[in-house]
Length: 164
Image (cartoon, rainbow, N blue to C red; front, side, top):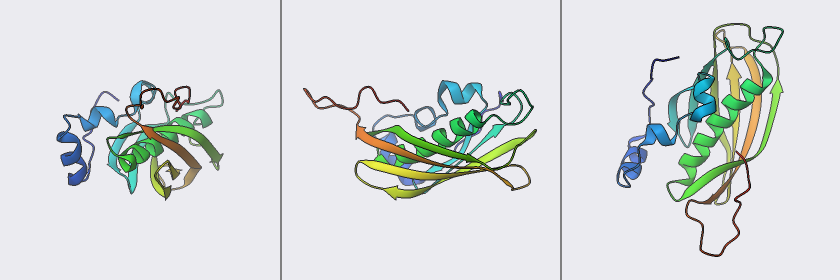
């Protein structure tokens, strides 16, 4: 978990954010929760986000991967895709997450792949497929993010209370 992986970003994304002085790896990281859970983002583009998470340390009392851990991986990957789709002027805020757990995982790494279902001006929806090391589907998830302005307009209410 202590090893840092470099994330692959499309060159146009690197250039766009670099021109604004933004450090992409920190902006599109797994965040504090994802870091504690060992989430590693390996590839990130609006069209596809790939990440891994260890099963060890993220299990429920029966020794199986916790469904909430799968949800954290899914929301992390889908949110990164939505942020990349929205660009530097938008923030992605998760407003709906649905996870279906198909099988348990007891060890190794799980890999999540997020691909867009819908990418609009105000929302983005991603499907996230989480598989075990044998390529068997562990979880299917769908995340919808609200894309809100990164800097709220003066006097507007915004969606300040939304979680995600």
